[in-house]
Amino acid sequence: MASKKKILKKIQIVITNHFDTPEDAFNFFDKSGNGKLSKKEIVKLLKEAEISGFIRSIVSSKLIEGYDKDDDGYINWKEFKAAVDEINKG
Image 1 (cartoon, rainbow, N blue to C red):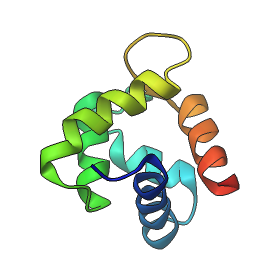
Image 2: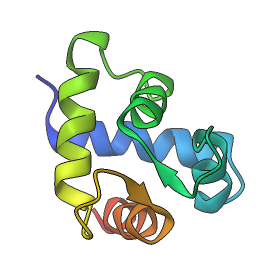
Image 3: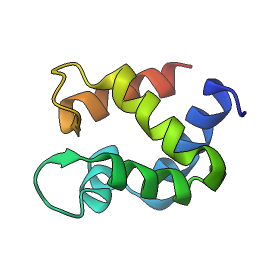
Image 4: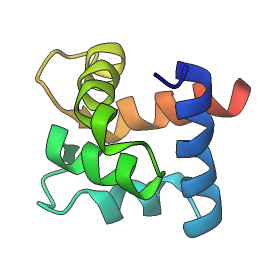
């Protein structure tokens, strides 16, 4: 399985190459428009980041587990921004 660092790097590349800001990326993947990324929406982000289909579901669960600070099962804008900041520091 790809390392966390490699996966986060691929996500960073998608965000920086395809969107003007992290907020644009968040809004693009928030297909439901509810201000939160569901597991299904995160899987689409991972697909865009060329994460193998075999591990997308596992990685999306781990991302939610790691960044969902309010434990609602979604990644909201604040949590997404914190994840992007962490990725950019890495």
